[in-house]
Amino acid sequence: MMKILKNSRLYSYILVSLIALLAGFALASKDDSITPFIQAQEIDQIVVEEKTEAIPLNFNNPYIFADIAARVDAAVVLVTSEIEVQGSSYQYLPFNDPFFEFFFGEYFQLPDRRPQTQEGYGSGFIVSEDGYVVTNEHVVHDAVKIMITVSDHDEPLPAEVIWSDYDSDLAILKINADRKFQTVKLGDSDSIRPGEPVLAIGNPFGYEHTVTQGVISALGRPISIRGDNNERPRIYSNLIQTDAAINPGNSGGPLLNIKGEVIGINTAVSLQGQGIGFAIPINEVKSIVKDLQETGEIIRPWLGIQYKEMDKRYIEEYKEYYGLKELNGVTIIKVITDSPAEKAGLRANDIITKIDDVVIEELDDVANYISKKNIGDKIKIEVVRDGYSLIIFAEIGKRPNQL
Image (spheres, rainbow, N blue to C red):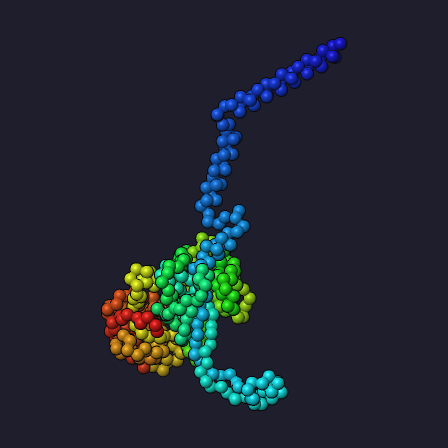
């Protein structure tokens, strides 16, 4: 009996405890107050959300790259250029008969020297509603006809070169059409870092609007690309390296960051390695685009010389031959006809050592200094010519639109 009573009291205690606990939950559900534990949880969630919003990457969106590509699709164009070249193919007799070619073609080849038209493909992107397009100079080099294919227009549209520069491998085209175009937003290539995700859009091998994705592999890469038809090589000193696939036909297309902003102009591929592409930083063309948008013309300071770095062997031989103790600078390899440099008296093989008392040590020093001057400014150039130091005064001119 006593055992039963104890058990009944135990059950009563358990029952009362359960009722009190349930009542506490009920009161808590009606009370607007928040316990410290719950409040701490909510604060942590708010902080996480704020941090997520501050980061442009949204890892919860698996379609972010597709969204970027769709947003800029109509602003990325196919550039088709026609170039007249001296014929170098062979005619087979008689009348290019395939059976005759198969058996006797290599013995009966006559050079076909008639001018021929070659068609090339490249990419570009529209930077203004009235149809200005940024691309590479080598995409339209020596072109006699340029056509632009826009995704939201049925037929290719004619275009012309407004500005081009062989050395920087940049060109600005103008689409000749009475309509408004979709544009891309230009980013800041000075703020990018290796490891950032990027998107390359273009027309490799003529396949329109191909999208590839990768990361920025490195910055400030110098490379040299051999010129065509015995032209001097193009020397790039500040390229963006990426592993996003860039193939022939991609040249001139945009390299985009995660915000959908253009940070580079896809330019070259490495034939020696897999997955190595290069792009010109967008900041190198932004001031040109700004001039076009604001004034309708491009005004660039210009001296009119082509130059190269001196190799160490040449420096030592030159110093020894002329008895010089020190020698620095860059060597002029060509003075452009009717340029400010020619008018001032600069010559090929002159070694520029200083400009306005600024010592010239690297290849970019000359271009960087000239780019900061205004049209009409006078500059003092110190050169070494045949072992003698000379001071030459020149006036900065306006660079021709096509050079």
